[in-house]
Image (cartoon, rainbow, N blue to C red; front, side, top):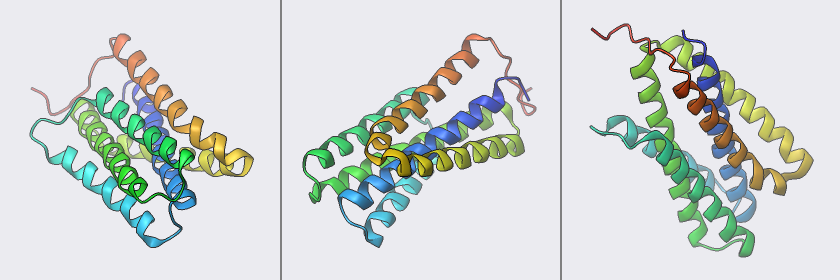
Length: 178
């Protein structure tokens, strides 16, 4: 495993957890605390992820992450101005689908570069758990601030690690490459 692989996978897990759980808590607190909002986020996330994994040519990673962030913040802005509005659940589902699409793009790209499943899933999962713990702690400290700051901070940190990895000219290790 290359030196930047673990931080890259870990930061992706943190960013994905932050997006997913902040979106979930946003919808649960501002739309409805029902199974419908939970199911819409989960189903949309999985649909976006599977679509990105199955597309013959997946979208580029950074624009997909940016689109997920923009959709999340659009949903947050709508719900901050007008909580309990009906179209917000659809906007939340769109944000979840885009975030899920980024997860699919990330896993597809990371596996293609490394060819190693175990460290990829281990580090991403550890990052996801760390992101979940950070979001959970943030909810107790200042939930409103968390919803505005955490996804942007996590996505920015992940994109910074991605950029540092790219400019370091880190060699790609793909054992299946000729």
